[in-house]
Structure formats: C-alpha cells, structure tokens
Image 1 (tube, rainbow, N blue to C red):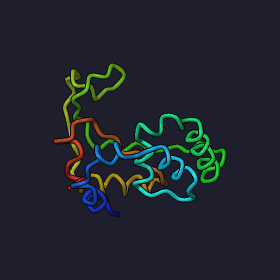
Image 2: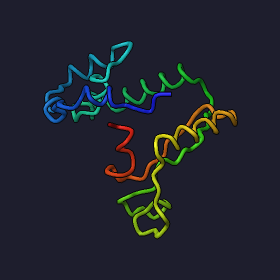
Image 3: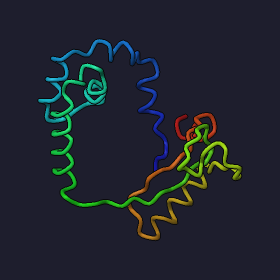
Image 4: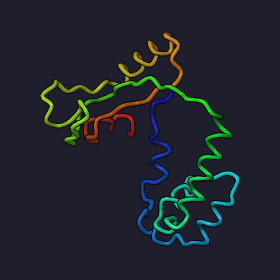
Length: 143
C-alpha cells in the first residue's frame, strides 16, 4: 500500500500553473476534446478559462467516459477520516472551526491499520476525508 503522492506532486513543484492556464487557447481545447486519452496537462487545459465555451461538449464527454468505465451503477465508498482539523466554518460539517470537539490527525501507521481493518471487512473503495487545514491535516501524505 502506497500512501504517498509525493512523486506525482514533485513533478509539478516548479510548474507555472498561471502561465500555463493563461496560454491555453480555443484550439488547445478543441484538440483535447478530440483525443482518445488525456494527460495531466490535457486535464489542466480543460480548467482554463478558454474551456468555458465548451462546457456542453465537456459534459457530454464526461458522461460518455463515466458510462463506458462504470456503466449505470451506483458505487458506494467507505469514508476513512484522516483528520478533523479545519479552518472553514461550514454549517453542515462537524469539522467546522467553531466546533469545540477534540481534534485528531491519524498517523501513517494508524491509517495503515484502519485500511487493513476496512479491507478485512470487505470494503474495496475508500473515500479519504480531511478537514481543510493543510499544515496539520494531510501534510504527512504529501511529503
């Protein structure tokens, strides 16, 4: 089990996202929409403001990809709560910053133990849940 995204993240350490997104044009979007398989940079191009005029084709493409990969099924995910530290104040969430609950961040070893327990119970799809507080919440998994 590999819990680190550091190699993938490191590829973009010095990447100039603002410049990249600013240089994407309509032809780039049209080229990406015609491709069979998309790279990370293709997906990033679709986040640029140049893609705004292509929302309907993007939605159709996303729908086709979803249907071809998953069919018409509903998948359930088991949440694994990694941290409840949060700087936000969302009313609907128990992690919100005004909540006086005790805060906890699982260690890498605790995450491994929880994953093993969930796997032993037959769970195959996990949804990792973090509060939104990058300094404490998920830093260990990105380094």
